[in-house]
Image 1 (cartoon, rainbow, N blue to C red):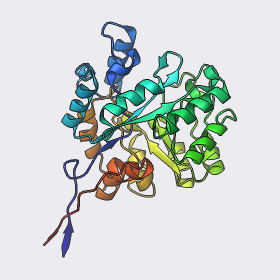
Image 2 (image 1 turned 180 degrees about the vertical axis):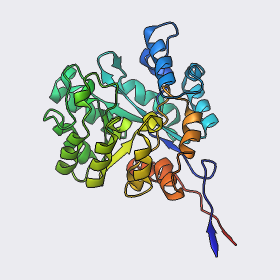
Image 3 (image 1 turned 135 degrees about the horizontal axis):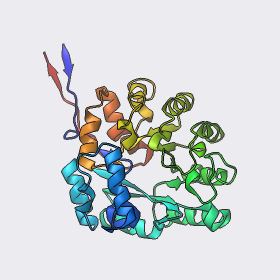
Amino acid sequence: MAKKTVRTSKDTPVVDMRNRPTFLHPFFGAEPGTPSYDVVRWLNRRVGSRDIDHFTREHDPAGFVKEMDHAGITVAIMVARSVPGVRVSNKDLSAVAKTNNQRLIAIASVDPIELGREAALAEARHAIKDLGMKGLNLDAGFYKKALKADDEILMPFYELCQELGVPAFVMSGPTTPDLSFNDPLAVDHVAKTFPKLPIICCHGFYPNVSAMVTVAFRNENVYVSPDMYTFCPGGSLYVEAANGFMRDQFLFGSSYPFRPMKQGVEDFGNLGLNPEAYEAATFRTANRLLNLGLQDVAMESAAE
């Protein structure tokens, strides 16, 4: 009788769907002694980091990749932010990605409230077509004028993503300034309107886990990436769903620098995901969604 070999991160690539270098912006802890630096340490404590100063080790792209190597991460998906207080330009992020374009993947971000819708659409198109960024992040509830994910202002951005064949990333989570905008039910409307568009829900709209899982159940084009919130109270429901119907819609993310990369990989491996769900979350689904072209390692079988 054949026995299936369970893979670990040593056997197959690991794609980290939410990983940003500290040096990108003070928001990520780039400047010791600042309020932002203290917030990064505070959030690390809140989400169970065993080393709350881990993010101080890397200061340039080479140091960042070294941290990835230490953690066993093959590819880092770097999602830009463009909201008041956190402006990471698409040009700067794409330049970081080009230092190691096989392992560092950049996702664009725009602020239609700040730029105006038409200018933001033009910037999004430029970032994807000219700068080679592989998706578009929308910080709906974090703009100066908070929006729900299905606000009419944002609908042309989803249409653009569908036209260009890249996924839309929707930011969410418990740090949304007004929690009433942290509403996964709005994603249901977007998914129904753009059924061919992959929609990746960053932070998994935590703590609204049940509603998020329900939206994913109804829409196979909705993907859930709860990253650090997977390990917070109630996060086990994401795992339960991933072991069932949500297997191909669940994505791994370390949420670095707000949680250590290596701890993220290790903790994710101990969640109780079945082998198929683990492989889908850490490699297969991201590889398909972002056309990464990563090669799988053949699974071995042993006879009993």
